[in-house]
Length: 235
Image (tube, rainbow, N blue to C red):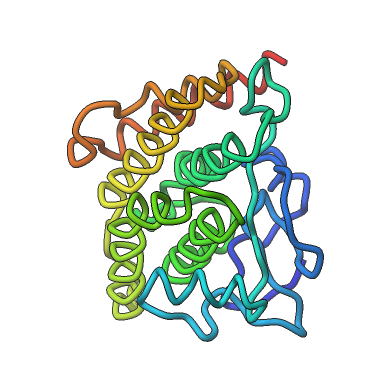
């Protein structure tokens, strides 16, 4: 793995697999760590050419300016298999970003152990890969933009605030929990509409913070992370 001040992990690929799992993705010119896509040296980094506009970011992906990190997770579909149709993959993409948040929520608290984490870069990578969920060719592009716009805007603000937090004292974990809830609830809405079904592990994500997104907390994500780890160990 590359070693630089902007990497999320300074560890082996095995650790990334254990923490987050590889998912099924679109994109061939990138290094994928748990489906957080790091464009190759020839492309744009997630923080490069970054924009505060979700629609502009989606267009950058669609026009090939940055890597398409459209990734629909692994083991989230019906019976733990792949999604059966394109809209299921869109829901899976949103749900996979929620899983990434649940697995790495303590990046936002500046308490993550055993690796080098840079919160601002994490937020920009997450925002970019979330935008990829809306960049796929499907009839729900406008729906996806509407469902993720507030979360993208919040991630932009969190990144800007984290840039100023030179002593790494800021705790934005509850803000990240709110974004988790919005993404999971959007995925649930689409899966319910298309009657796609999902795995038991996806059910853990969907059943956490099913109420008001603003009431979701880091404590909820911590409990969920333990449940997800137990689910992986049981298989």
